[in-house]
Picture 1 (cartoon, rainbow, N blue to C red):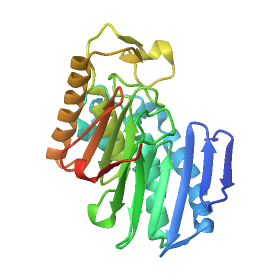
Picture 2 (cartoon, rainbow, N blue to C red):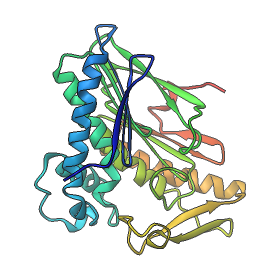
Picture 3 (cartoon, rainbow, N blue to C red):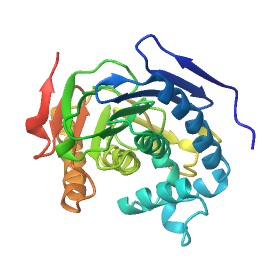
Picture 4 (tube, rainbow, N blue to C red):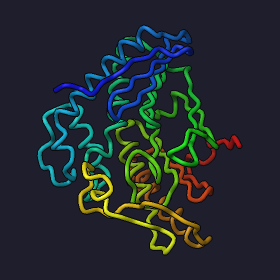
Amino acid sequence: MALWNHEIVMLGDDTTLVECGPMRLFIDGSRKGVRDPDACRVAAEKALAFLEEIAGHRAEMHQPAVMCSEPPQSDLAHEMWRAVRLMGDHDLTPMAAVAGTIADATADFMVSMGLTRVLVNNGGDVAVRLARGEQASVGIRPKVGTPAVSHRVVITADLKVGGICTSGLGGRSFTRGVASSASVFASRASVADAAATAVANATYIDSQSVRRGRADTIFPDTDLQNVDVTVDVGPLTATEIETALRQGLERAEALVGQRLIFGACVIVKGRLECTRFLSPLVEKLI
């Protein structure tokens, strides 16, 4: 299958940018404190192959994961299917984990080349691989569709966090909730990606200030058929904000209790709340 037009650019800070169709990947890798742009370039080529593999199973990936009794015959497609099935949501398709899965696969490949610190950022869904003694600072966006960060979390190898993914209103994917950002920390980016979608969806509230529409009428090629999604959120009352945050955090804490994720931060109308174990690690920047 032919891919979209693609471009690989070596950036001035020794990171690599890969752009191909819907994928915009930033790759940063080092070996014991020394950046390795050559390895990043090799990983960029590999990421394109990963995208092509998933594209070959596109039709299967547009079906709700709970409807697929047999996993797709592809390692990456199977990982997407598995991550979404863990959430237990009946209308989530494996596409809810696509960005995190590609980030994971690229990061794992870089570790196999001997890199000790890897960050693969796929449109805000980040795979992290840290050897002992390494650390990384990860920003939390108050709005998923903007580059600004309001808080950060310093990740160390001891935390065993391998993925940080964000979902919410204004992102690349649709949401049913009102959260402007739901960032999830998990051992794998594929699971964090699916969980971020589930947590953001859990912030659904019934309000006259929330405008919704059917996903397939907004974007006919979406994997969400006959599903109402949030289009716009106007001013919310304090009670509505509290309800949305509570529901999102309850969903996240349930996933923590199942040991599927490490924690999550949810932001609604500028107000941030985090799960219990993650909260002490979150540092406010602005």
